[in-house]
Length: 105
Image 1 (cartoon, one colour):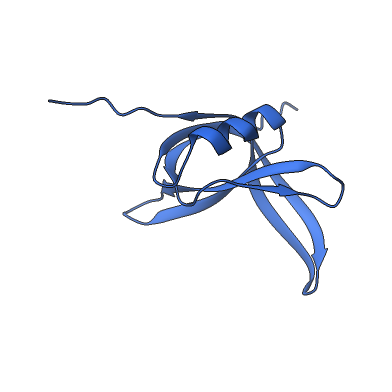
Image 2: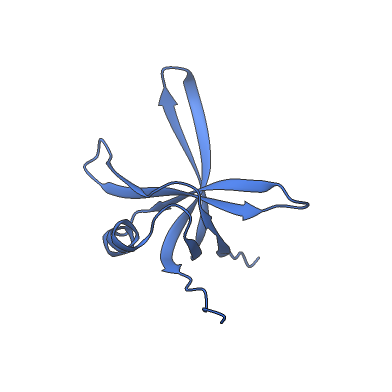
C-alpha cells in the first residue's frame, strides 16, 4: 500500500504569526490560514512551522492579510490539558511562500 501525505494550500493569513517555546524546549511558529471552503465560507486552518528556518522567515516576512502558499503534511497531535485529553489536526509546514500580487495599471 502506498500512502502520500502532502498538503498544498493557498490562502490569507488570518492573524500575525506567533512564535512559542514548547515544554520540550523546541520552538514552533504558528499561524492561521483562511482558505475558501465550498460557497463563500472561509475555513481557518492551523499551520505550524517546526523547522527553524521556515518559522523565522514566516515571522519576518508574513503578516495578517498576506496571501501565502503553504506546503507540508497533515498531522494530528494528541495532548492533555486541564479539560482532559484533546487532539489537534494541523498542517506542519515545510515551506511558506508569500504570494506577490501583480500591480495592474
